Length: 279
Length: 222
Image (cartoon, rainbow over all chains, first blue to last red; front, side):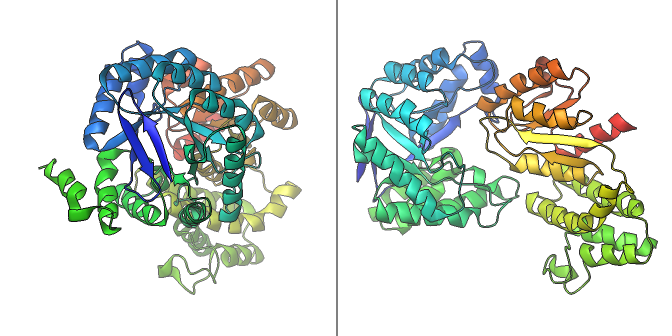
């Protein structure tokens, strides 16, 4: 199955058989206080710098989150989108808990964006599915609902199924639903990652959808974070992860290595290209 | 007597829950916090002494090592489990009033936020500092905090948030609490939170790590 996202003229295809497409996570004020201070002044230079660095490092899509206290994101999210669009022709993943901000940003962005995100709660589905349909956007479905987050992969799969069913009913194409199996910190629960890996396998085998996840938080509270993240991402890719949201400056090498190992990179073209570009 | 208190403290610091627990591997087949606390009480050691001279100093060491990045979240959780196994023996004395804790602490992750690791670490460190902890869980709004305060009006309050988008809700909760309980003390923390933000929303204290929260509470009652 293929999810196609579009920038102004560019097109990115996320294929359930790979290769893996990295969605750059860095335009996000959590743990990036400089982003808040520059955006508060209406200064987009740092956003553009983050965009450029991520694209150079291997991001094919950029996540855009400008949520921080006191922000009017119905205004700031589309402004940020326009600033990025003015300089880079790349599809965007619009990341906000506020459906109004998402809608305003979709209007500004054009192309075909990815919405981050809906979940299995009625409130969330009712607020966002019709917006996704109206603007022809793809969307990420988080495998959680009114009851919170379950540790049972089968139940996470059931929530994914529900989101897919509701999206299709709302007129969204099946291939435009991307599932997030939820990756939680393994420091506080040693089974956290295996639950995610198992959910990925189930969603991949039974629904055949593209799969994303925030791939940097599993290592919270532990040393060797980059080693842990890269091991996890390789295992997740083997199970069916196709478009992680991560920091490309840290994860691209592992992603390209995984694609090569899984026989998706003939003559190691993309793998070698990545390292040649770094020498 | 000091020897058994030292051993309990060791078990808590290094996360030895009970004899059958295989962790830490270096303490295999030794008695854990569970057996040692029971034995200490049986031999006449006062519960106060166990709390003050074993559990509190051990957890303070854990908190300080965590602040210095000498240990990580899983080690802290092991220590907390060992502490809980000791605390279980002290609970009857807390309930009867024979052993007094330092005060009450209400904690929760604010509305819209489901991240509980940071909140749990702070809760266990404060419990290990000798406080009674009332944990409101995640996604807790002003109403929940107010209800808890209605019941425990002398409690100190802690708010946790991991996301820049949910941090805003701290302001609403702080405002609501201060309106109804102007004398209350509120501390806040979480990845996106800063000292400046704490001052801006009228909270009383910001701590970048769990031990900072424990130290703040200690200073409030000293």
